Every structure is written in structure tokens, then in C-alpha cells.
Image 1 (cartoon, rainbow, N blue to C red):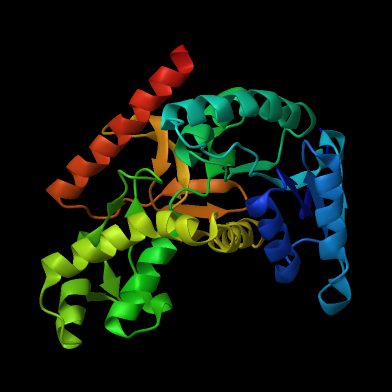
Image 2 (cartoon, helix red, strand yellow):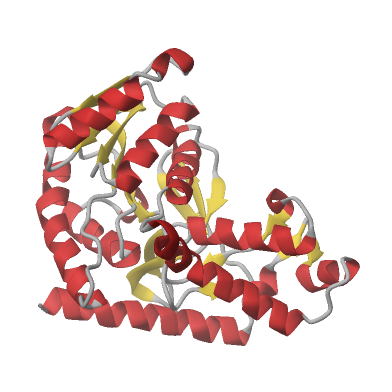
Length: 316
């Protein structure tokens, strides 16, 4: 078995998200080697060259376009490849298209790299994370998706703006699907240990129901708003990829809302986002945050929504 190089990563897919992630990883100094793979080899070579030209202003690193044979010792393989949704195309059409792409990509990764971590970023991330686990045969802890890491960051950002406080002092999660059935886990949210509602009142906000509803909708619609204004979102997710890679490479045991295979009494047979301890071995454990009855019901509904799509895809 090939020994893993903890300072090496690979990105499969060099579109907006893949190339922005490559740039974010270069800036981070986390890796000393980064392989870019794309169906369009010229695109991968162009991105690698463009980023490489800035290396004199950063840290020493080797960035190059390659093939699957170049990733055998990569500690983290980041999959951003996938088709975008076209006008008139249903979500299920898009899912089937991207599952077909994964049926081509994932076996090639698994053939050459049996010990790395597979980080799925392509959408719909929860469906594709589950499919990647099935296709790769990797243990569940080593296959997970970016999930709601970005949604959670958006929630913290909007709460920080609302409360006039540093977003890094806010502890709150978006859980469930990375999509329309996601849930803001308000009942466990706090600002440096102070329950959210209490902190809101300290800052002069008393209309909790309307404020939380508005902020949750703002999070859910963030991507739609950005896509409407600039056609794609890529910087936020690239920074999320960098953050997840930090937790892995530094074995931080950070708690992040990644999308992972669920196997509990309440929810199983599906991948979705729950707070998880992330380190060098991938998802080490799930963190059972407190949820109220409504949130538990919404989480179950989110899981059922994803299962219905999975069933359509796997039967098709």
C-alpha cells in the first residue's frame, strides 16, 4: 500500500469552485504539493500555471496538472467536478447527470488511492457523498462532503451583522441537507456561551421569531442571490474547503458541519450534515447537539427528502 503524503492534495474538477479552492489552498500554505485534474487537461494546466506564478509571494509549493496516476499518495482528494443546472432541467436530472460523472471519477480515484480522504464538494453534495462512499468502498469516516460548512458560516456571518458582534464568537449550526430542506438549529445556538435569545435581548432585539425566520431564509437563499448577481458562487465554498483541509492536515479535531453517512436509530442510509469531529482520520465522531422537537422533525424530513432522491437515482 502506498504511503500517504500528508502535505499532498488533489483537486478533481477545475471549474470555478475547483480553481478557487486551489488558490485558497495555495494561500494557506497547508500543502507542499497540489495536483489538478480536469477532463479538459488544458484547463487544469492553465489554472496550475496561473496560480504557480504567484508562488514567489507565497510559500514554496508544487502545483501541476496531472492524471489519476499522480494522486496515489495524496492525503486528501477533493472532488468538485460536476455539471451545473441548465434552464428547464429538473434537480433530479442534474443529480442523475452528476451521479454518472461520479461513476466515472470515483472508481479511478479508488483504484490508485486506497488510504486518503475523499472530500466531496460537487452538488448535490449529500447525494454525491453517499454515492462516492458506495462507489469507492472506503470506510465511512474517510468519505464526507463539504455539507453545510458554508451554510453555517453564512449563518454566523448574518447573525454577527444582526448582533454587531464578531461572527467567530457565534456558535450555531445549519444541519440536514445542503439545500432547501436545511435546518437552522436555533435551540442550541449561543454567543460565547450565552443563549442566543438572551444575547439578542442584550443587544436590543426582542422579535426573535421574525428575526430568526428572516436570517434562516437569508442563509438558504444566499447562493441563489449570488448566482443571480454573478452567475456562480465559489469564494465562500473555496474558503470552506480550506477550513476542512486545515482540520484534517493539522489533526485539529475541529467540530464542523460536514456531510457524512448517518447511522443512528433515528436516521440511517443517507448522508447529511451534522456537527462532527474532523481530524486526520476524517470524521471521527458525530456531536449530538441538543435539538427541540420541531428541529428533530425537520431533520427527519430533510433525511426523508434526500432518501427519496437517492432511491430515484439508485433505481434509475
